[in-house]
Image (tube, rainbow, N blue to C red; front, side, top):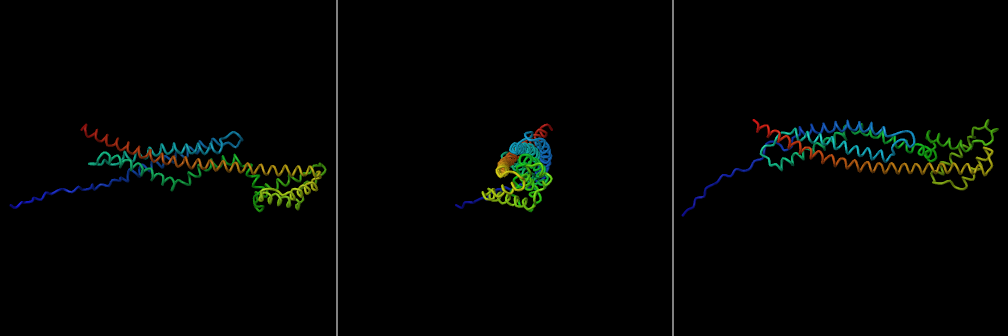
Length: 303
């Protein structure tokens, strides 16, 4: 008995011709997010600069300024990423014959891509403007916090060929050779050789970290001979000047350490703001896509 086998045609599943990625909504959402980011950054820069005051104790500290700026970055990412992601999900065309889970994944991916493109636009195109806007405030706060100390320390340890270092060092040297006797005021201009020697001693001691005993003794005798002070008074004047320079160096180191900690805090919170922005954009795109499909389904039902 011969069996006859019949051939059954099975239709192979075919992929949709439409791509899963809709670049139009992604680009639109990215442009909206980057524009809103720029506007909010300018607003935050204006608000941040109002926190900085040139008067001692009147403005925010460097750490407070950096933390508040980083928190503002999180707010900016929250708002701009939400708007960009929502537009990317709401503006895409409806996918027909796609499982709900796949639609949800695609919407989430569209929001993430819109956020990524917006971030590249902000970094690549608007990066210099944003850096200038944010850096102005940080630089102002840092200058107010440590300007005097940095200037004094720079005068003691910088290269003697620099004009600003010469001016700062000259002021310190002039304070050494101020005459104690009023009758010497007519000849108050310091001798060039004495001033040059004192400047070199201060610069060398700042580079070495401390002034040697021999240099301190010689400098005291030099000051005594020039100003008419007793050797003990000249020694006290030199000690006071050295203490002032050391205090300026300590204040400069403290300001630098504060700025370093503020920069690290700013970087960590900035990275956190980007992660939050990516999540918000993805969630907002999923929400926008679902609302778009619901609105279209409701419209078809009423017809």
